[in-house]
Image (tube, rainbow, N blue to C red; front, side, top):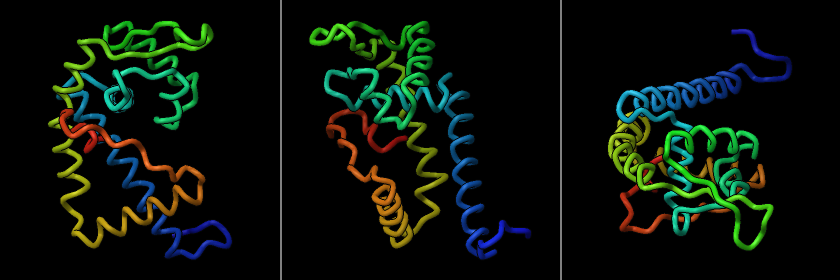
Amino acid sequence: MSTPPDVDPEDWGVWLAYFRGARELIAALDRRLQDDAGLSHPEYLVLLGLWQAPDHTLRTGELAERLVWEKSRVSHQVSRMEARGLLERRECETDGRGVMVTLTDDGERLFQTATPDHITAIREWFLDPLDADEKAVVGRVSQRMRGILGTGDEPELPRETEARAGDAA
């Protein structure tokens, strides 16, 4: 295997295996969500972000931060989902320039319908192949990377009573 200059071939192999595996996992999750619920993985992530928010509502910028997306991407995604009746937008009551995004009843139902199978797929394809030590290592490495990137704040955990959606991504 040819590697870029100044990269150890073993290190390059680790990077490529991780990168390709992560991309293939996301693609498989996307296909399964499409087949089972008619949702794309990005749509599911928007629903999850709003589900976890107080009153299932966030400002567009807050949603962008949670998703680690550009605001323009969020805006386009929200427009498509609003046209499907899954979300609604309204002006922020405290700031006329702000836009709030809220789950509709249809969006909540679709999220709750999609979540159990999505969690099953995450368990089957990601969590179950790992033993307890490997899960701990993946968790520590992920947190360390987020710390290096300056994104290491823990996300808000969902309330226990809410559809176990916090297990999904």
